[in-house]
Length: 187
Image (cartoon, one colour):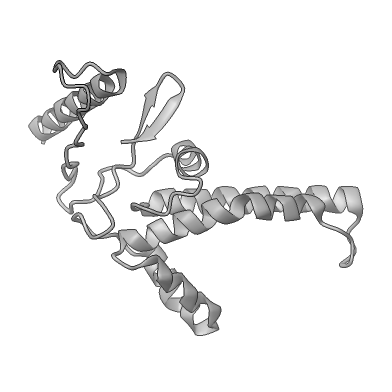
């Protein structure tokens, strides 16, 4: 067990170093147009899923900054649900601000909530589609939410564990962000 953890840490450090060199252009070769091929992430647990959950701050950073309109790839359960919690808390707080500023009546304007809804629409849709990709479903399955009964399978897929192997939509999410001097990338 301890040996596996040490091997995993060494592999992570090696991949981080390769990525840093690639980012800085230190490939060690004279070829100008070299492309970096990212190594496939190795499973970190016996189930093939990441060993740890993505932190709350990393989930927000990944959804709002790295993948604002990123519909490709996969999103883990922790990334999806932490972002959903963040959006809910933010919506609740802007609803209170709307009530204080504009009044509590039903027909009072809700400008702050409307602006927040517009700002969070695309990242929310993107993380939802990437969550569907994690369970092996196409993003087009989102459209079954139009029917009320279609919300049931969508909810089940959102709480289900994703595929434990690379699927048509990408590799297993790593749940880690590499930090390069204020530049966050999902690695």
